[in-house]
Length: 414
Image (cartoon, rainbow, N blue to C red):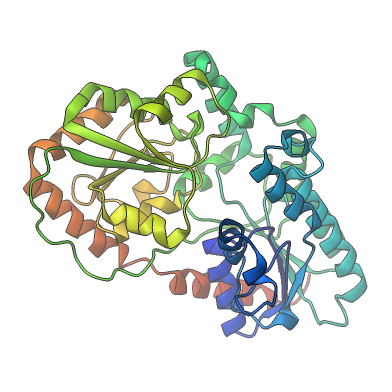
């Protein structure tokens, strides 16, 4: 039986929980905040707060969910109220790092007390949330499954430091450059303790070549896409190509190169940005005033926004996967992205999207101009994108990871 922990429970976590539950492998899910529609206090909350918390809804028996909400609740409240000192990177009492460390320690403590009683044979943890849990698991002779959702940190640091020199006005948005040596060492210790490492893209897998010698096998399982509800139809020719970006607004995502490309095309395109800034800087503040900007939306509304656009541009410099790639394709958007995402694992270049080099606003502009000038090609690529997205399901992702876990947990300890 598996104990899985994660502070927020994103799409891939939920898919794995479902897979483990369906194969009778899930013992317990440890997280921060859980809220259900039926909870008595839900309708007492302001609508915006209610929407935020209902994202933390899980289709699991309550007996299999354990929560530690305090720090995460403070983090969410502080973010909404602008109480920044509580969420300062790494050092803030309710920072993301603090929330992760707190959950990790609590999981490790409970594991030591209850692993035998709950027949736990393995733990499944994610980057930055695994060190104490894995250390406790090793003492109990439990298997340690590690999920690395983004490329290995040494590659990330190299790229982001280069970017700080190339575009110093964007340096404040490259938050990975501010990671402490303690945090980076923690990442390496987690990798070393893992018995199996899961990644979702070949890019992430390649970056692990920079890691200290690993003894654990690395398994690549591609994430899933939302269901495709119907292929796009011919639309009236638009005067402007509707371009969309979804993700955190910072230079790790290559945002300045997208903005430069949009400037090159001028009135031929219109841009929508969905996401919160990692940190504000002068060129980003100007971009948020110039283009349509939506800070946050519930997932279903993001998909609806996607369906109202023509193309997604995701020019990330350093990624692990990029869930928005498959999400956009499911809604009929060809995607322009880079080799530093899951793009090469999903996209057939020129058929359902384009793979362009990192740091190339010229290449992005060239592909956008092609779609502006050839609306028949845009429609063909739109339909091809949806047909490609059908090949990737969350059910398949959860089942594939669960089956690999079962294979390893059924092996005798040695």
